[in-house]
Amino acid sequence: ADEFYGTEDAAEREQILQECAELKKYAGYHLHPEKPVVTEDSMLSARCYYGRATAPEQETVEEAEERAMILEEASMLKKYAEFHLHPEKPVEATDANACGRNYFTRASADEFYGTEDAAEREQILQECAELKKYAGYHLHPEKPVVTEDSMLSARCYYGRATAPEQETVEEAEERAMILEEASMLKKYAEFHLHPEKPVEATDANACGRNYFTRASADEFYGT
Image 1 (spheres, one colour):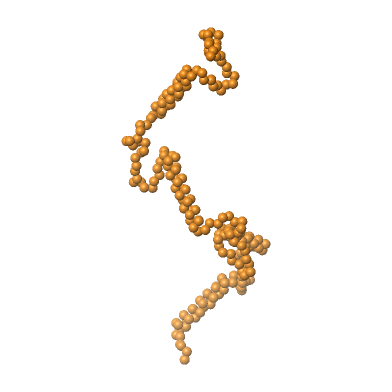
Image 2: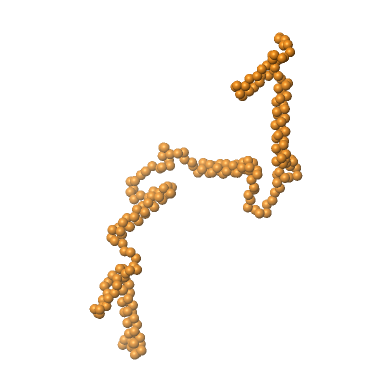
């Protein structure tokens, strides 16, 4: 004989089957929202979910087609941008007869560097950067020393015990003035030491008389 259910088991089984039927019914509502609502009350009414006031704006067929076309063009732009960004990637083609020349090894291409040449070039550029860095140290010794170690210390080159005595601004100006005066004295002393030298002037209109042939000069004897 088939399994026998008691009164309580039969009632529970009946309740479970009813709940399963309800779950199937509501699952159908979510799975097929486009189905019409079936009701036995002719007075019932409801608003459309998609046409309610708070619903997002719906696209027309033309707008949807234009949107799809824009997305397709954006996808193509992304594809071609990647071609330019990564030219080293292999070209994928579905045509077995397709062929092409290498852009980097063409006759009119710039000189191509191999792996060893590229490595040597990189090393040379690094050494040039280091030379530029150290040249900056010698060209601008007044610049502060930048370091990442807070425990480093050093003495000042100009303030060390064996450094030559530094002049103040006033002393440097006075020294420059003394040298300028000494230069002028040397110039005028040369005028008296060699009076036979011609006078050099930057003014084309400047003129003067001869000291030795002036009217009040002593008698002049020629050679």
